Amino acid sequence: VQLVESGGGLVQPGGSLRLSCAASGFTFSRYHMSWYRQAPGKERELVATITSAGATINYPDSVKGRFTISRDNAKNTVYLQMNSLKPEDTAVYYCKARDSYGSTTYWGQGTQVTVSS
Image 1 (cartoon, rainbow, N blue to C red):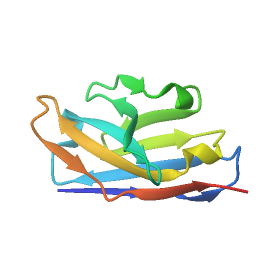
Image 2 (image 1 turned 90 degrees about the vertical axis):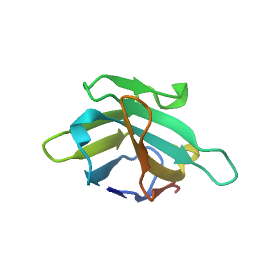
Image 3 (image 1 turned 180 degrees about the horizontal axis):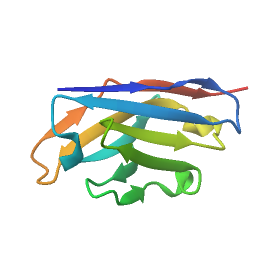
Image 4 (image 1 turned 60 degrees about the vertical axis):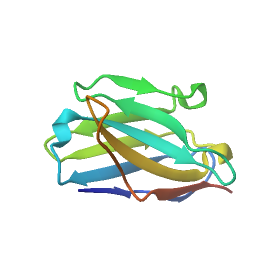
């Protein structure tokens, strides 16, 4: 099983990035997918979830209207489109896969996003 994030990097405030998480080794379409982030010295926080049925849920309020999660089951990939980035969005971003029963969870290794001028 692998979850491989990509697309992170350094971006100026107000810029955009699209993160990708490529999955392999499990039936991707049956799993709920989430993006989390962890800033230095802070706990990991849930950013957005997309269910196996394609329903999306975004947390927290600070990213609503700026971040969009999507998935492509044909490519076994989940995306996080991040617009109007702010310095406080700086963090390592992780993707997570969870089955519908909540009994199996997989994590990626993370990708660094730095928002700075």
